[in-house]
Amino acid sequence: MNNKEAVKDPFEEKISNLKSEDLRKALQIFKEKINYDYAAFLNTCVHCGLCAESCHYHLTYKDLKSLPAYKLNLVIKVFKKNFSQTGKRISRWVGAEELNHHVVKEWIDSLFGRCTLCGRCALNCTMGINIPYIIRTGRSALAAIDLVPPGLQSTVDTALRSGNNMGIPKEDWLETIEWLEEELQQDVSDSKARLPLDEKGAGMLYTINPREAMFFPLSISAAGKIFYAAGESWTFSSDYYDVTNYGLYSGDDEAAGIMSEHLIMSMKKLRCHTLVLAECGHGFNSNRWEAPEWLSRKYGFEVKSILQIVADYIRVGRIDLDPSRNKKIVTLHDPCNLVRLGGIVEEQRYILKHATANFVEMTPNREKNYCCGGGGGQLAMTLFTERRLKVGKIKADQIRSTGAKVVATPCHNCIDQLMELNKHYKLGVEIKTVCEIAADALVINKKKTNTFHSLLSS
Amino acid sequence: MPEIETKGKKIRVNEEGFLVNPEEWDEEIADLLAKEEEGIDALTEDHWAVINYIRSYYLEKNLAPMVRKICKTTGFQLKYIFELFPSGPAKGACKLAGLPKPDGCV
Image 1 (cartoon, rainbow over the protein chains, first blue to last red):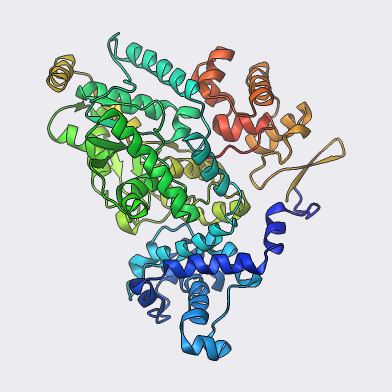
Image 2 (tube, rainbow over the protein chains, first blue to last red; image 1 turned 30 degrees about the horizontal axis):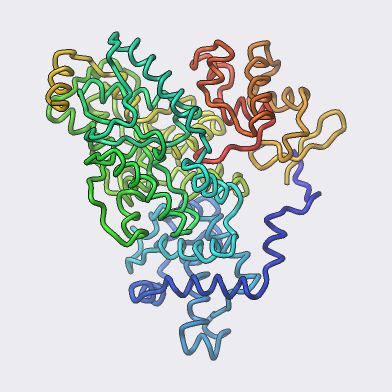
């Protein structure tokens, strides 16, 4: 393939056509985001450089532009120019700069193109600066003037327009559930096995990542099979069922709020008590932690990851697993949004230890794990594909050194990036969700299933 | 933006190899993408059954078909679709059928 700049890129054109009122608008949004905590963060960086070794971009490129403190400084210099006396009066001396065309370009290239918002730098920051939060506010300012890179913006637009981020029409979603329900009935030899839809008063509403229904339905079957074995009272919703929220990545709080509101509408409609989030890192972070902030109100229901649910089933003996059914060596990739930023750390390990005969950790792991490189919306922003694959080498090397044949990860975004790394770096591994592996080990005990089922439906 | 070349014609693709202008697609492009992107030397009749269905569905609805529809129409099992296109229905089959990159986590 050649890399000739034959035709002017429409996104590039949009940047060069920026007017001064656009820049003022972006600045306004930026200013609105600044509160005391934030201002303290922006005055705190002591340039110790510890963040360098924590960032997968810096470890890969070893250049200044990939340094978290440098990316942070891109935001700090605009803050200084607008909020500090020295920044206003002696801008050059203190490195203050107004949000101009040049800075906007740098913001896009760095805040969108050299960061997955994985938070590993913040974990290692001596001053405890929430770097990804600050990077995201820069993204918010760019989102306000329609400068979110294509792919990421279109994913947000599709979710707002159609209610799910892949634009799946309702009849296709229903047809897919019907199909998967038939498959489940054959799989467990029970014509009464169901993938319930719009069941009012069911205990749990289960959400999915639309890519599961669209292209990778085995993970839906796996969750359905586990719910069946546990005799759970649960349901899908026919309208809003999408666990993803790309507003987290684009920085657009208003769009993010609308998407979170969608799931609340399904919860209200079906009167469920627990919103169960599928294996989706950013979907967990968005819906479990961020959404009440975006909406400025608390939920009136519980929000849990499917991993918490499945781990509980195992703990109380509600499902039985036979680890000898998964003999291959299995390792685990920790999705940043679920683990480091979401707090779900041990549940996936607990499940895998009960569902597999040979589980090995990669190093480092848990909250210290490296991002796969596909987070922060990178997977959607094709503009930065080359970087995404390059920084993914750290993850590829981590996987290779475990000797594992299967990589489990509770995040569909990570799965897609790992599938690409698998191909690009010739890892020769299978990539699965945690529920898929648990479902493979599931021993169906009809008596148990029926007991829980009748207990919960009475 | 990158380009691929077939029969002396230059076709624009995005950084992941998806066509920028899906209307430029033809069978030679599918062959080329199969080699370059999927490592498939020669597309078989079964590959074409999937590609042609995805292509015609897209032209009609401006949308990629769900994998359910692909299985139902071609009569192939899900597992076989993944054998045919190792990168899966999105980055494998849809890319070869000249569709733009789908939105979402793909």
